[in-house]
Amino acid sequence: MNNNKLIADFMGLYNQIKLIDNRYSWNDSPFFYMTDDSKDRVMEGIVEYSKYHTSWDWLMPVVHKCLSVCHNEMLNEWEESFADKLFTLSIESMYQETVEFIKWQNKGEIK
Image (cartoon, rainbow, N blue to C red):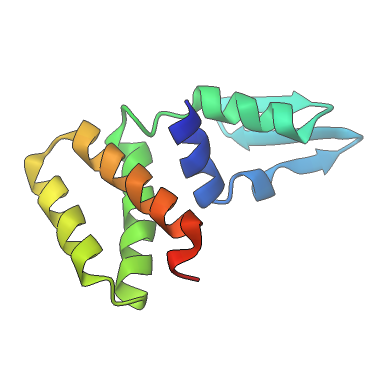
């Protein structure tokens, strides 16, 4: 689940948690709703709910964002690597590629 948290952070979900009436909440209406008095616990709920590792519907927007970063920063090797993983049609491979890219980006290799 740490990798799903990494992805959720990359996608900006922590910043989408809203404070309403002294409670933090996030929703993926009509599928999921989370509220708590702690923003971090709401994020934990989002991470537990997330399906980046099992659903193409969840993972592909992340891949798209990664590829946009690659294209904008002219990271041809990463773009090619993503394309190779996509051709395998393996969600596990694409998920791992996505996680590795985000970890690499978080090291400060690109701004």
